[in-house]
Image (cartoon, rainbow, N blue to C red; front, side):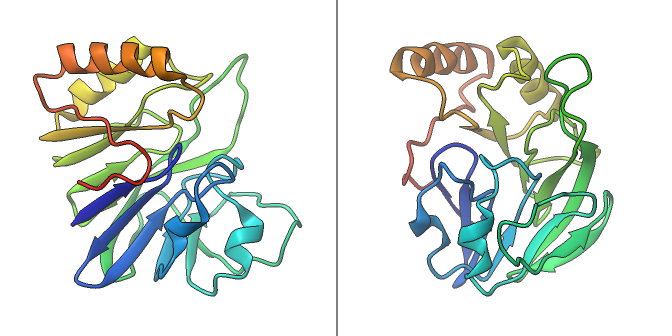
Length: 201
């Protein structure tokens, strides 16, 4: 499976000519969706889903069953529940978790699904839900208003994957990213590697 990181939380997965894109938000590059066969959206926030861009794409878009995407564009979606298994772009996907992490005082209260793809790669969206199965590749949130770095490190340790790439990092400047890279690199035994937008692993 080829993994290409785009800005913020957007990643593109490719295998044998099939393309699955996760969380193409308003901050990610439109080219992330070129040739996409299906899209997974972890939750309704615009940094994870660009409704207008997806409306004209014409491919299946999987979203949490409780997601409220608004009336910005007519977007046909496939509603997904926690624990559900389905196929998207030929990849086997398992939806886990269910709620967005709390930012402050119980807010926001919205649905958030993490996606385990082909039982190998895990994108948690805006949560730190630990799946109950082994994970080979973890996409770990690096920075958010709902997140402390120590929580992200503890989450990565709890998942215990073979390799770790950061996502959710668009609000970090170079100094901030260097600090995050340093801490993840020091604490995660050489499994951590940052992918800059457009870089593939």
